[in-house]
Amino acid sequence: MVVVGDARALRNVGCARHRVGGALMALDATVEEVVASEKGAKTGEQIQQAFELWREANPLVANDILEHARLLMMGGSPRVSSKYLIEWARYELPARISGVDEYAINSNFSAPLARWLISKDQRLASLIDVRRSKVDGVSA
Image (cartoon, rainbow, N blue to C red; front, side):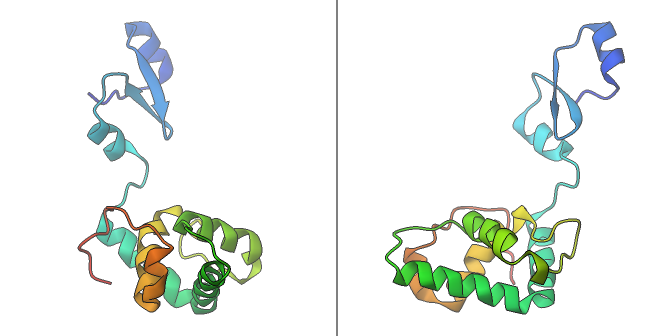
């Protein structure tokens, strides 16, 4: 059950609640209700499209991320996450990144980035763990 209203109204009716992504949710809310209530929740197709727009706007940054992953692999790193690569780019390349939304690189790009990196260099498949994602089955 999704709770609608402000904290004072909820306090008045004694409803157990907690804040999730800025929305007040009942403690008995299902996972699906919490996910659906997230501000700006995106579908897999929307995430993939946004990633493609970001990659087209940032070809040099995308290639730098690819090269960094290759360097990590050649350096003997057993695993690397695409989230780490996103954070690396945010820290190391902030002036070169052009955001296509409110973020320089959206954290939702983790799954499409991993798949893109592996499509560019199959050797990275042993380095980058690809898990199930909303973008599975969405064509790039």
